[in-house]
Length: 335
Image (cartoon, rainbow, N blue to C red; front, side, top):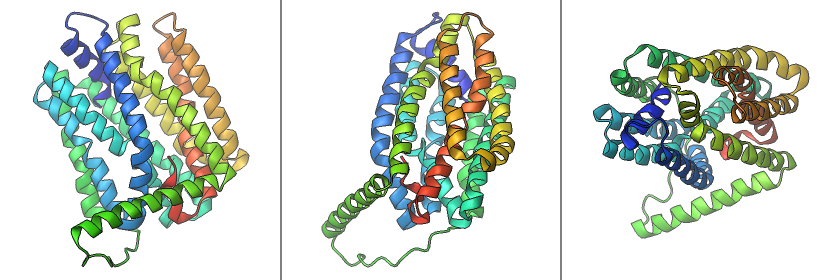
């Protein structure tokens, strides 16, 4: 729910009395670069840790990291706190961006058969979209001074819920290295992580499907992350958008995403398959990028949001393809 207001806060803190802020765009670009590079290493490691130590502790860790950036701006919105927010946000995104769904998908794969997974992935994304709709609705209705306080309270609910209700699906093996010296344990840990990453690389490279889907995901995420990092600042500069317009667009996208992911995807996927759905989603993302890049009036971003409702199907269709191409124990190896 804090996404719609962060452009206003960053611009006001770093570039007071200006509608555009090159510093904010630079910081967001730097964040995308650092997070993208680090995720290449961190997500496979988190995935292997989830296979070895369980889904629940890893989900608790990565969900909890999202609390701290919002907590910083709940305290103060001055320039120093904004910089601290971006530092913590980079750490949080390295840990959680992408890995939350990968481990959640692995959790679903542990308890569902292959025929049910595609629908489950669609429902997971649909519920995420519903949470985005409700969060953006709150952001639209609440005064800006209360958004981060409410956001922190809501973020705390997630790990508390998991502690109480989430059950572990991975059967842990006894630790045979507990009597080793700390230096031997450290060496064994590094050796195990290296072996795990080599195995994950082998899983991907030994399958032509996984290799192709990795390339598609790489170029897709590279393009879309470049757009998302500067989009709000572009709209603020070009059309003087604020949190109200951002919330409206995000609510439109959220409602449409719920329909496409929870209703359309489970119905269409058995008829045409994940690959066709993926092609449609990629075409929608290209149209979306062109419309925003050539936006000539303030209504164009609202129209472009319609295509965003379609390209969100890229993630569940990709995960369905990966899930079918890999075994249950390798579900979180997807980058």
